[in-house]
Length: 245
Length: 306
Image 1 (cartoon, one colour):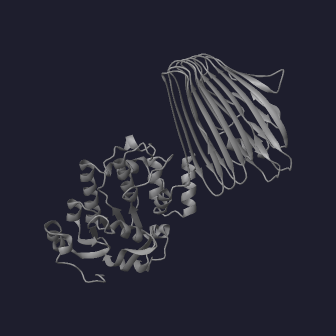
Image 2: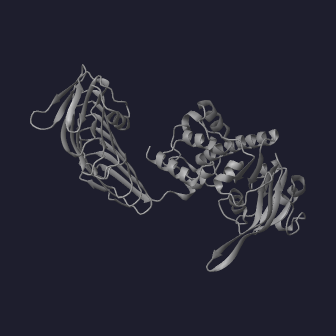
Image 3: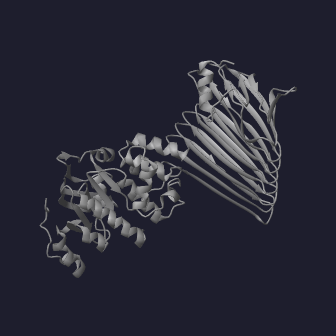
C-alpha cells in the first residue's frame, strides 16, 4: 500500500517561491488502480516524479508497505518495489532494446521473454530487439519500449505517466488489455496519469489534480459523471483540504 | 611457443577473437617477432630492410583470420612496419592491436605503421585494440599510423578501440577509396586521468560511387584531453557520413574538428559532431531500474562505447 501525506513541492522562480503542489494526500491499496487526471500543468507529472524520488518534495511523507520512503533515493525506491514509466523516455545511444529490457528486468531475459514483452506493447519483437534505443526510433516506438521496460519486472506499484501519449490506436488497445490484465490479477498496484477516457474508465478510483491541488478523489463511478459532464473545478466530490488517506 | 602469464593476459584483452598459435599469426613481443605461422592462403614474411612483416593474403582466403598482436612488457621504443597485400576477392579478418604492460619508470612506446593494399571485390575487416596496464610510472604510448587503399568494389571495415591505460596516443589514418569501394570505420576511445589522445583521419573518396561511414565515440574522464580531426574529401560521385559523439566528464577537454571537403558536384558528405555530459534523464531512467548513480553511469558509458 502506498500512502501519501500532505505532500507539497515548491520551486524558486525569478527569486520567489512558487507552489507546484500543495498538501496532496491520498493512498493506493494493494492491487488498486488509481488514475490521476486533470488539466495540463496542474502538477500530475510532478506528483509522479515526487513519488519516484526524481524530484524532492518540500514537505510531506510517502510510505510504501509501511516503510517511510520519503528520504529514499530513486534506486532505493525501485528496490523497494516501485516502477516508473516516463512520459517522454530518454534514448540511449549504443544500447539495444534487448539490453535495455535485461537491465529493466534485473536479469538476462530469454529471447521469448523479450518477444513477449515487446509484443504486449504492440512491437514486432524480431524487428526491434537488436535495434538501438536511440534517435532512429520514433517517439511512439520509444514510448512503447519504455512501457515494456516497466512490465519487464514485478513491482508492488507502477506509475505510468501518460502511457497513451504518442501511441497509435492499435498499440493503445493492446496496452489497455495489458493494464486490464495486471489489474484483474491484482498483482501490482497501478497509478496511471492520463487524460484518456478508456484509461480513466478502468480505474478503481480517480483523483483529479488541478492547479497543484487535489480537486477531487473518489470511486470511479462517483467521479466519472462529473469529469466528462462538467468543468473539473465544479466537481461535487471535491475533497476537503488535507485530502483523503 | 610457451608464453608467460603477463603476455597471455594482455593478449586476452587485445585479441577479442582469441589469439592462438595456429593458422596465420605473428606475435611481436618487446620488439621481436617471437612466433609466427602461415596458413594455406595467408603468408607472413619478415621484412629485410626494416622491422616488420609483409602479409600476403591470397584470393583463396575466404572467411579466414590472421592475428598479428604486439605485446610490450619491457620499456623502450618499438617501431614496426607491417604491410598487407590483399588479393582480389579475398575475404579476411585481420586482428591486430597492441598491449603494454608497464612496471618500470621509463617510457614504453609502440609505433605500428600499417599499410593495406586491397585489391578488387575483396572484403577486409581490420580489428585493432589498444590497451595498457601495469603500475610503472613510465608513460605508455601508442602511435599507430594506418594507410588503407581500398580497390574497386571492395569493402573495408575498420574497428579501432582504446579503452584503458594508454597515457598518450596519436593516431594517423589515411584511407583512399576506388570506384564502388566502401569503408566503415568505428573508433572508440576512453581516456582517464591526464591521458592525451589525438586522432586524425583522412578519407579520400576518389572513385565513382565510393562511400564512407565513420563513427567515432569517445569518453573523456579526469583531466584527460582528446582531439579528433576526421576529414572526408569527395572527389567524385560519392557518399560520406562522419559522426563524432563524445561524453565529457570531470575536468576533461575534448575538441572535435570534423572537416568535409567536396571537390565534385555529386559528392554528398555529411558530418555530425556532439560533445556533452552524460544525459541526466538516462541516469534517472536507469536508476528507476534499481541502479545506483555510479552503476548507471558505468552502464551508459559501456553501451556508448560498445
